[in-house]
Image 1 (tube, rainbow, N blue to C red):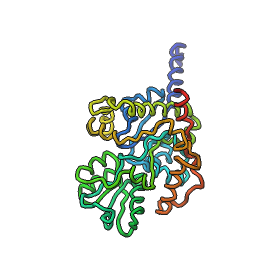
Image 2 (cartoon, helix red, strand yellow):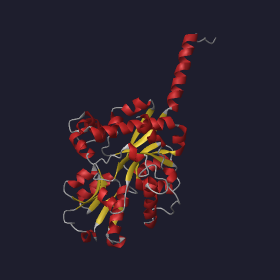
Image 3 (spheres, rainbow, N blue to C red):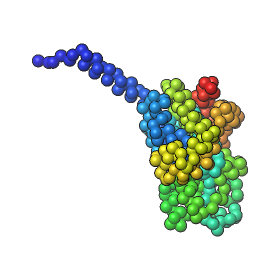
Image 4 (cartoon, one colour):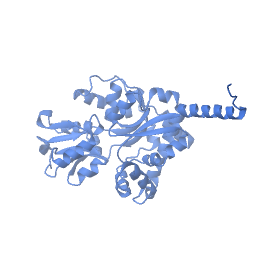
Length: 335
């Protein structure tokens, strides 16, 4: 004979089922990369998930290209990527929107070379490396083009950053365009030839951005707005309160726990962060640029370069649809 479930227990079971279903509805996978960024502290201590109220699974990747592969497969809904893999991905048909600029070009990425390479002419006949379809790969190729060095006059290999460090230590490469932690490692016995900021000033600008899939952003606008708001809190804190991000700070310790290295190492790496104030992010300089400027123009120009380099086969007439300032704009309206 079947036992009857007491009403109270039945109610608890229903509540548990509803709670589990509700939690599943509010789950998102967010990708980030190696290196030190202010928001990483919020991943490490769970604060981003706590403040948004969502079940967030954070996954670390070695490059933006890897993140876009995960986005294309449906495994990731939001990711922190560079402008070069961003341009390549949307040119191939992936639907994402830039929702927050995580960094402009600066000292956080650079072309590191052997000490004997002192002039542009010394680049000829050498072997260089960069992560595949990364902003570093794009800027490395741009440097060679700017210096009038053809592909036949040098060799560029596209390999993941951990392999770049190993190749450098073996003496297999003469230089590499990298970000941390590889940047700090190569700097130990190499020299900075050009920084990302310098290459940008020479005509090859890049940026980092959180992107969300078009479908996820359309279905969950409140979460996306909350997410960029929390992320911006970390960048604002970093910009306005450097003491809170120093070598002995809790924030630096949190980043080190997640990304490796010491707190002092990560505090030093954070100094390369190029913060783009939220008022600028939503302007025509960045997310609000439309076809004429900002993110859309950088994406189109980058796509054109990548097509010339045979990294992609076609470029779009416009890239304006891949930047959406409305989520970041809610930060301004709430202040």
